[in-house]
Amino acid sequence: MHDEALRAMGESVINGAPETAAALAQKALMEGVEVLDAINLGFVPGMQQVGEQFAKHAMFLPDMMASAEAMRAAMQVLDSELRKRGMDRPRAGTVILGTTMGDIHEIGKTLVGTLLTAHGFKVFDLGVDVPSEKFAAKAIEVGADVVGVSALLTTTMRGQKSVIEAIERASLRHRVKVIVGGAPVTRRWAEDIGADGYSKDAAGAVTLVQSLLQKEVRVG
Ligand code: B1M
Image (cartoon, rainbow, N blue to C red; front, side, top):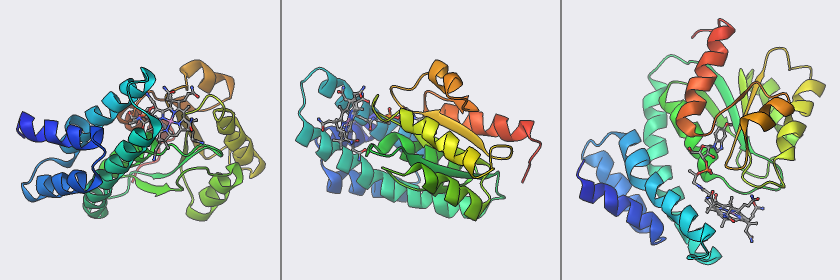
């Protein structure tokens, strides 16, 4: 894919232009561009730049929200394509994802889901602001192998521990692995709360889930 096309994707996110972002995602699919390249080399760098600008107070909240909307519009187009492809493949395992209660950040979590889907996992995304008990209920309903909990705020990280406690209360802890991630989350925090794994990014989350399920000798 041309650098120019990738740059345009990133800019559509930085400029907070959902229609342009969706159109560029659609165009990429029509031109046979690798979906993960469009995500990782096109749209995500735009969102990263937005994060940096916001941290430096060079961008304000309404603009950041528009950027998030553009990112979401592109991901909707690309994610549905990945899901279609995932249907043709044997299932590598079942994963439940969600962002903790009180936290509405969804982009990183959605990205984790997209990459897991692309690697053959069946993913149930519970969305954002998810009560801990809902993770456990869904894990029972679909027979999940892994529950992944994202948190982007220091104030909502505690919710990851609550999810582990809910999984314990539902007597699922022996068969369901819990992984955590999100910008303020660290390996140390994951260990402290008794999570089975931590990944700093979406690609690492895929490797982590694969290795956790291999250890359990669960294949297919
Ligand atoms: Co918010 N926000 N935000 N925000 N926001 C942060 C997180 C912040 C760091 C910005 C800042 O001040 N520099 C800051 C948190 C400070 C803190 O607690 N330490 C912050 C704040 C303060 C807030 C509000 C309180 C602002 C306000 O209202 N005054 C508010 C809170 C709302 C709430 O949740 N209750 C708020 C709101 C919002 C928006 C709604 C405007 C929007 C979210 C829109 C949406 O998601 N639909 C938003 C955004 C976009 C951000 C930043 C700029 C970008 C987040 C993002 O999408 N990054 C963020 C600044 C930053 O992170 N630098 C910020 C791109 C994404 C790909 O990365 O989500 O980190 P990330 O995910 C990565 C990894 O973390 C990892 O993989 C992903 C990809 O590699 N990962 C996992 C994530 N989940 C994982 C799960 C895993 C494994 C890996 O396993 C399960």
